[in-house]
Length: 76
Image (tube, rainbow, N blue to C red):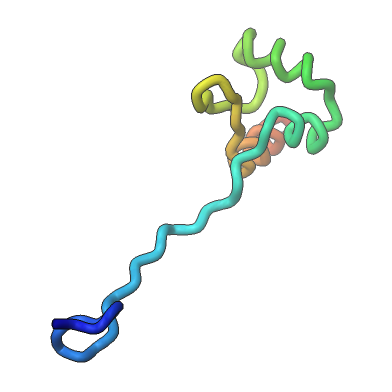
């Protein structure tokens, strides 16, 4: 038999970790970051004008990296 967390070789079992990534932002996070009302973000999304959003079930989420890139495009 093997002990808990060890292989038969006596070495510790390899522990795999999930890659880390920045937490996705809610529409309220993006609203605060950009300084625009939530309603404006919904309008932009409907018109395909604002930063790209991801729908997870019934929730909208934004990748912070893509939001920052979108802001950079608007400034350039």
